[in-house]
Amino acid sequence: MAAEPTPEHVDVLVIGAGLSGIGAGYHLQTKCPGRSYLIVEARERIGGTWDLFRYPGIRSDSDMFTLGYNFRPWTEAKSIADGPSILKYVQDTASAYGIDKKIRFQHRVVRAAWSSAAARWTVELERGPARERVVITCGFLFSCAGYYSYEGGYDPVFAGRQDFAGPIIHPQAWPEALDYAGKRVVVIGSGATAVTLVPAMAETAAHVTMLQRSPTWIISRPSVDHVADRLRKYLPRKLAYAITRLRNTSLQAWIFRLSRKQPETVKAELLRLAGEALGPDYDVATHFTPRYNPWEQRLCLIPDGDLFDAIKSGRASVVTGTIDRFVPDGIKLASGETVPADIIVTATGLRMQIMGKLDVTVDGNPVDFGKTFTYKGMMYSGVPNLVSVFGYTNASWTLKADLISEYVCRLLKHMHRNGYAIATPIPEPGLQEAPWLDFSSGYIQRALPHLPKQGAKEPWVAHQNYLRDVMTLRYGKLEDGTLRFQRALARQPASAAAAA
Image 1 (cartoon, helix red, strand yellow):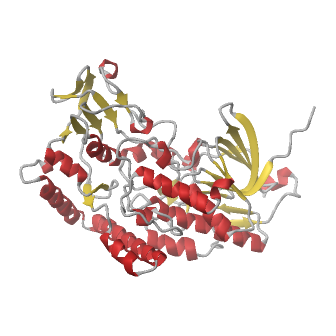
Image 2 (cartoon, rainbow, N blue to C red):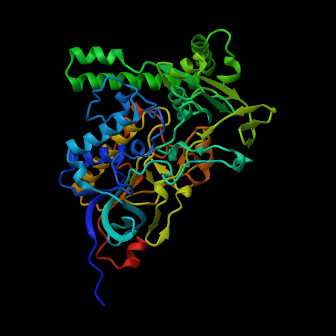
């Protein structure tokens, strides 16, 4: 019987070729040129979220001066950009730096097994439609797989669903050929996806109704950053980008802190702005006054007040109420009212998951990420040589992704200089736990039992503060007594390595 071939080996294996994965590739090849890396992507194309989602109006809910990479300035006119423009930016970045040549498409990671004896991960993948088994080993595993399931969104069970005569669509699986021109559309939800869909579909639909159980805090912002435009006229491109990025990041952080310290002040201002946009006769109290304080859930951004304009024009409307059941011609509410519809869109959220549902073991022992602590919001207690990217809930995802990639490069160089092969975060006994994310959004609350915990003190606290993370991740001490370093154990018997 022929021996199984030796697996391909790389120093770093990156999971995912979306916004985070392409950024990770750039940082690795620029800051750690001596380390080999590969990016494995389950789908057929670059882009992740920005390739997967195809619903009308898909756009960023952060400005591109902070959602863009820190190493590649965003040069388009609009700072609140549409999905195709963002996808092109990610693809162009991959091509410009040769990162696309490091990607293996249709490679879905299913298992990762760590061996302390060998100081490496053995990663099992399924390749192509036939799901051919492929094995790659690596010294370091870097997950950029995002935070939600690509298999499908959260789609709650509604009574009478089978009775509705028209199509029912979740935005994560938008059909390319859907014709909604001249149709009555009901969008269930009030989050970022819903407030994007409603004005976009209202351009050609007969009418679009945003049906919400409860309102979301919404703020309008110009789609073009005029300050950034002026800076670009008089300063070098990279300098103008850096100044705008710092300005916007600082503004985001200030609004978040103000929302937490003086919620009534922020609420009053948001309501004033909504009332000003919708007019004195609109019932802002019912439809735009949430039950929670600003930034207890993510603040929804609408560019140039497009949602307010659609409502004011009569092309769209908001109904606040509880669904009783679907009926053949629409949705019947608990109040007895029926909201008519030819098409129903369930913008009800995502299914959150960590590490892309990857089956992980450490020296033969399964890892339950829900029982781990997160080290600096990116590594897991007791799991060696593994980092995953999770962005901010109160700011742009890429701000944190760039910092984590920079940290990984610092860590790899430190380990190489000192002859270390293993880095494992180890909590002290009795570390008090806290929820990883202090956010009341439904997709987070549904996933909390399966999410890792954060600790009550450093370095186990997952900060939602970019400037603080700059100091910690870019300049903080690597040998902090919590991240334990070891040299290779390959010459020891497996039992001795496991004991160590």
